[in-house]
Length: 156
Image 1 (tube, rainbow, N blue to C red):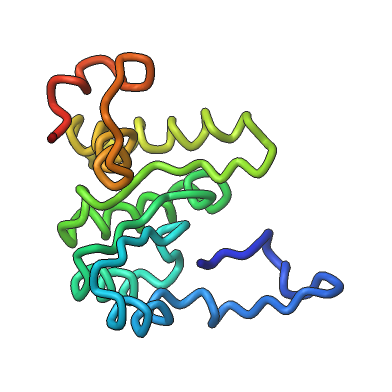
Image 2 (cartoon, rainbow, N blue to C red):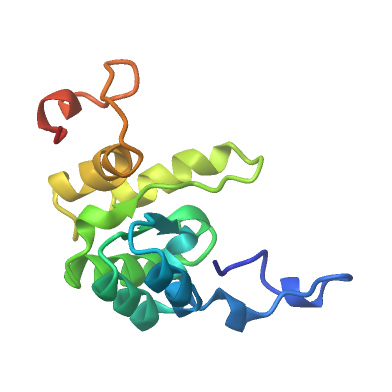
């Protein structure tokens, strides 16, 4: 979903990008026709907050990842958006994603954006950075990939 590229991407030669096509509610027909389909929406549907919340409310099989919004938009805007998703009750359906696009230094920035969010509890941070994705992708916890303490708290 949106954002599809850097600011001004729609004006790049050959781009057929349209911001309206990033609307998370465009997924609704697919979800309605495939009730067992589990999906995650990249970039948490930013900037379509109300529509993303509506989709998550209507379809409990929809999750989001944070993707590029954790390092490309201003931190205050990222926190506003993330806080709203958490306050709407979806902290168990938010997954970490760096979407580093070949810029591995942005992975650390993305992780730090979550870790330094003072409105998140330690449990919410752990869920976002590991547990939610492990549950969504049905991963077996392994000591190699799991952060300290994750093995004991991951639901089976």
